[in-house]
Image 1 (cartoon, rainbow, N blue to C red):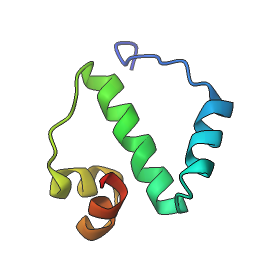
Image 2 (image 1 turned 180 degrees about the vertical axis):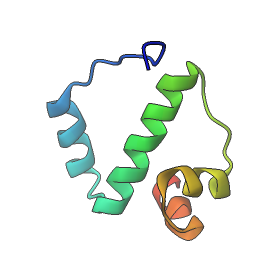
Image 3 (image 1 turned 90 degrees about the vertical axis):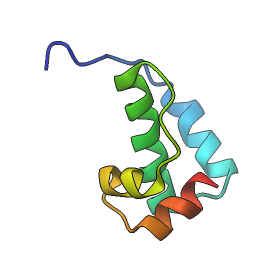
Length: 68
């Protein structure tokens, strides 16, 4: 776990952004997972919605609507 990246999160900006986007709780969760995966890899992630749905623990259809 020591090698895991550490990221600084501006919680107010995050909450204001997801609120302005009128995101559902599920969409917020998928969005957070996407942000953490990008930070973990240090690079963009592939647009593989089935893989992302598995990582986010949601049906593929929910991942599709969250990343559109």
